[in-house]
Length: 376
Image (cartoon, rainbow, N blue to C red; front, side, top):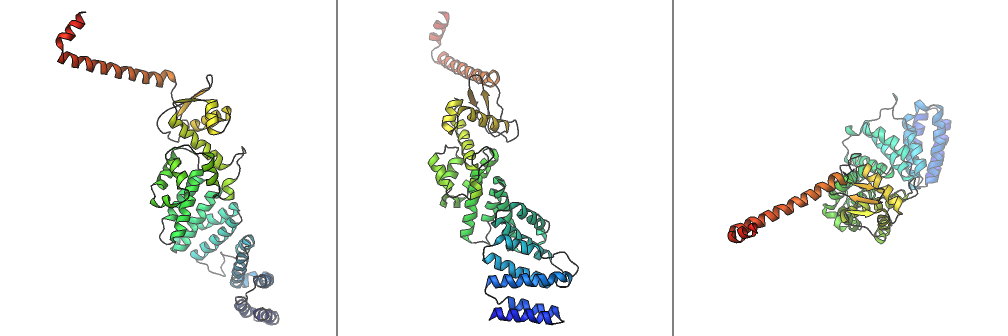
């Protein structure tokens, strides 16, 4: 019934001199069509007609495209939805569009591109929204902007920024409890996947102190990472089951993001357990060969994410106490001539002070004994 009315409306437009009124009737009838295929087919025909006089039918063009986008989204054809929405003119003297409506269009396009993992175009439209989002007071629109931003950072493996974004969203009262816990879970996953170092330690600390985290499946691995405890392959495999496809993608060296994050974490954990360790022994602990273990350690020290030094002649890694600053080169520890000798001197000084204390106490309590002993 609805389809026949649309067909009648199309015929009336073709035969009528008052095309704008005819298009208004078409759009009104198109809204009642339940078949997405019919809605898209009629919409495509209408867009062809609009193209002949684009400037005269900008409002009708926008309405038809929105209806088509909704149909595409319901059919889970998000790429087509994004493309048809992108054709809506937002900057025109013929049609006034508010900042809020512009942001709404751009975020809707962004979300559709994110559904097909096209982060490049998604970020392009989100950047347009970023220039105007500060003028928008709508809470839902601001929420979708923040969520899209976190999802793009997540997809681009900027995991620390994504974790912060997800955690901020999880604290917003305008979303339901289930959604808040889901975004908190995403924040934990991104923090675990981030490169080991002081910045990640702070991110893990914020999440660990969140009382809600203890109710989530990811809490055991969060706790172990925050406390710098070694992770077992079984724990890592269980955690990997809940990750998205892009979070399990392989890096340029052939390893996954998760595998790399776990190796770096276990290396930090080892630095808490050992003062020094051989290349091969460390490799066995990390599931790597000795040379790869040395390479990983050297990179983390150089990037300021681990404090230590490497003796390549003896094939030994020396770990130092304290936390690296995260600044490049800040992880390099002093050699044995400096740090180790000062530690030895401190121990000798402490021992001498204790001997002096015992001698002084003996002299106070047994002066005769001390006098005889000194004479001897």
